[in-house]
Image 1 (tube, rainbow, N blue to C red):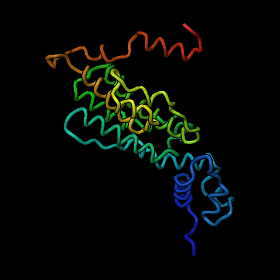
Image 2 (image 1 turned 120 degrees about the vertical axis):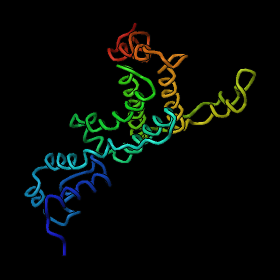
Image 3 (image 1 turned 45 degrees about the horizontal axis):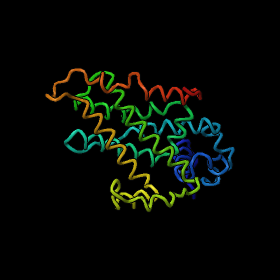
Image 4 (image 1 turned 60 degrees about the vertical axis):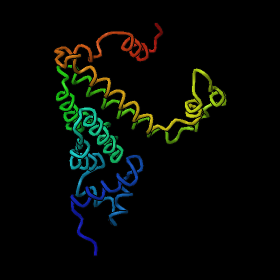
Length: 238
């Protein structure tokens, strides 16, 4: 005998279905089939599809921002927090998609962003530089997940034969061999994240460790990088 249908049971079943099949495969009919009830019974208990989705997001709103931080050195602590965020997002892609659709993704990531910001502050960053550093790390994590999600359906890319024969005085054989292989996205991301965090932490203090203007050096400011971003957004050429 099945348990009686309740709003909580419907919400729990909807979450399980979203975790299993993703947002795009979710439907009230499929949920009703999982519950062994008529679709009208679901509407009676939780309302329409949007109301049900809102209820699921509300119930799981604290999941994305739950990150862990380990290590003693600032580098290790920031990297561990960012890695924890990456794992959390990958585990709850359905929630990320729903939160993004509803314009609340940054709000749900708030606890994780505060944790990363606190580590940069403890390492010596100050002012707007903390926000820039935090946003840079979170954006790198988010971009890696987003590209990886869509890359699943991309056609495999050939590296090219010329790289296999480019070893010489300027490029040792091991480097040429590595370049001739298809890049490992996860390995490349780890290199990017480590380089980013190392650069941010290196700018957090001067030679004597007492620099009182790290924010000015870390903050994006104006320059060729932002100029290039502006050009790409506008679609115009310099």
